[in-house]
Length: 198
Ligand SMILES: C[S@@+](CC[C@H](N)C(=O)[O-])C[C@H]1O[C@@H](n2cnc3c(N)ncnc32)[C@H](O)[C@@H]1O
Image 1: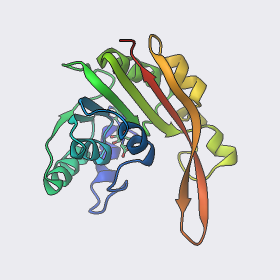
Image 2 (image 1 turned 30 degrees about the vertical axis):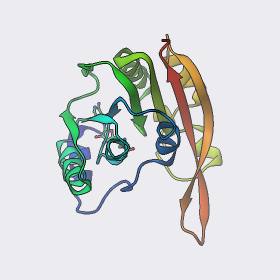
Image 3 (image 1 turned 90 degrees about the horizontal axis):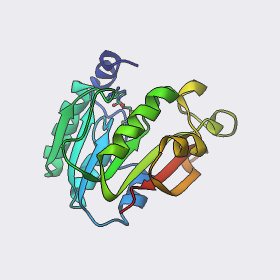
Image 4 (image 1 turned 180 degrees about the vertical axis):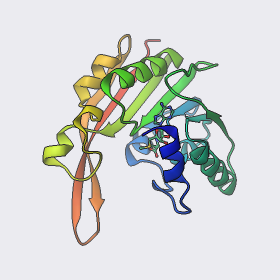
């Protein structure tokens, strides 16, 4: 989807994603001391806003201005400050070293994902971490929901291959409950945490 399609999707009054953070972002980042973080492809800002509430100094980057406007309103309502940057990740570089780079459900073809992960890795301060969570290819056959184009799905090993120069701390499939309470189903995600050597 291009930025105009995302603008259209975010134009709806209601939230496209949840108001609270992704559970794996909260689990991993909740165990880290707050520092400087950037949320790449931040969308409506659920993870960036949550990080700011935990004391992180946060920048959210996305190419959807409508998504960023929504994120800004949500941050104001939450009483937190986040720097919102309108940029295409195909051309983005960090202006300051980051202690945490978050990539949450950015589903681009492999070459574009490799490029964004490399940009994220370059943005890290020594000892900083890249936290990537997204829809796994395994979800197509064994899980539920999510994008159906296998070219935009990735396995833990794919992401590890994109993390050149980083020490991989976690690379695994994780399960996320989706569906209703009456009919719970499980989605299979890929989670990778990788650290730039100190
Ligand atoms: C599935 S949403 C995930 C949003 C957010 N990370 C979350 O987990 O709630 C994917 C996001 O990627 C953004 N995006 C896709 N391609 C992009 C690009 N090349 N540059 C910047 N943002 C991009 C879209 O605008 C959208 O907000």
